[in-house]
Each structure stands twice: as structure tokens, then as C-alpha cells.
Length: 345
Image (cartoon, rainbow, N blue to C red; front, side, top):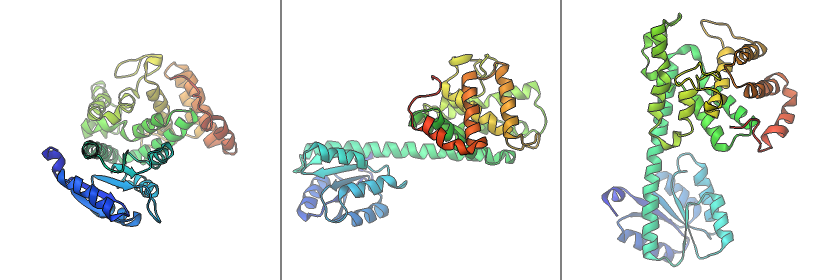
């Protein structure tokens, strides 16, 4: 194991049999790990919260709280969900593995341990955990920057929060996959992160932009893309960031894409973003009613700025969720409970 892995690497061994704990601990100590031990589920959870181990070797069959329940609780907690859990069992059967996967386990080892197998799996998962932590920290930094950008302009209020909530609802209405809905929600927070690179004199200007100022303002989409692009987890979000100002007829920016050359999630997000801007009060405009907002968006669609089929779906979504709320159960039955998407991506 290299020095990077040795640096503060801790493994928690959870087993109600002292001899089994001692055997695993001895093998891990030889590899250079700091080893923690717990004899039952509640003690294990307390130790995890106190010590933040890099990996948990977790016995399945324990009295009281079994290993599956321990794993479920740890994976449900924001602070412990990234810690790899390796189930240790003498049960080499399919049902045990399925239960472990359902509980959120990351790997399995069969008693008695093979030292080489134990070493290889623990080393790999410790590395993976630290990489995941780095990614998690990077994502949190991005969201923090996005909140800072939003706070620079006090006129937008809770714009991002509204986009996140409506993005989730509209994504489910369209029958999008879980990852696509997540990308829409993240887009709600991150779509304007590039405004961090726009001078306040332009970003906060109360009047109309000059042509030169508007060219600077348009750069926020490419700046935002460059900020988020290095993170693999942002792969589905960067097209939203870059292309949410494109238009169906090719007159948008930055790439003047036309029709379905515009990434589908960017088309979806654009409708949510425009609607919220219209339906919210700003210093330069009043708050339009729901119907007024939809009328303005339809006028833009008639000018060939928006995807007409998607606009039709968005209108129905708003009518069901904000105008005809008694029909919400019908909406849930028609859209959320069926896998089909209203329009092809």
C-alpha cells in the first residue's frame, strides 16, 4: 500500500465474535491500516460517527441489529453514505448478496478470509472512497459558488430553489430518468454559475445593456461550462449550462444551435427558467400571472424560439400543477407512474 493510502487510513471491523474480529484486525494491521473494532450494530454506528473510518468490514449475522440494518442506516446518512461497506459472511448464497446490494453494500467477502483478496479489495475501496470524497467536496464548492452568485443579485430572490423544485416536477412529468431529473435539478443551481466571471457593473446594471455589454454578459454560459466541466459528475449538467439560451430557430447563443441539435435537457430547463422569470417580480417588471406567462412563452414559441411539442407539454404541466390542481391525481397516473417520455430526447 502506498503512502497516500497509509495516510490516516482506518478500517472498522464489526463482528459479534471476538475471534473473527481478531483475525480480520491482524490481517489489516499487517497491511498498515489503523483498525477499529465494534461488537454489535449500535456500537458500530457510534464509532463510525466518532471516527469516520475509510472502510467498514461488516458481519451480516449479528444479534439485535444485523449488518443489513447497519448498512442501511449508514447509507441513508449524508455524513456516512460515502464510506464503503464490505459485507463479511459465511453465507455464500445469492439471497444474502441480493439483500446486501439492496441495503447499499459495496462488496462481499466470505469467511475465512483470503489475505490477498482482503488486501486487494480493501485497498481498492479505500482509494475509491477518497476519490468520491474529493468529488463530493468539489461539488459542494460549486454549489457554494452558485449560491454566492445568486446572492450578488438580490432581485432574483429564491430563483434557483424554485427552478430545482419545478425541474424535478417537470422532469417527472416528462417521464425522464432519475439521472436526468437530477441533472435538471443541479442545473437549477448551476445554470448561471458563470456569472461569477461577469463584472458587477454589467451584471447588476439596472437598465438595458449596450451591445458590447450584452456580448460580455453572454460569456457567462461558457464560463460556467469551463467551471463545471472538469467534474465527471457534471457531464449531464454542462450542456444545460452552455445551451439554455439557445433558440429553436438558431438565433440564440452561444452556438446558434437549431431544433433538436439543442441538447434535450437544455430545452426542458429553458422553459422552466423562462417561466420563473416571467412569473416572478423584478425591479424592471411586474409579476405576470400564470396565464400571462404561458401566453408570452407561446408567442415566443410561435416565433419559432421554442420547441413547440415541449412547450405544449409544459403548458399542460403548468395547467395541471398550478391551475387545475384537482387533476393532480390524474397527472400522477398519466405521467409519473408511466415510463414513457412525452417527447423524444
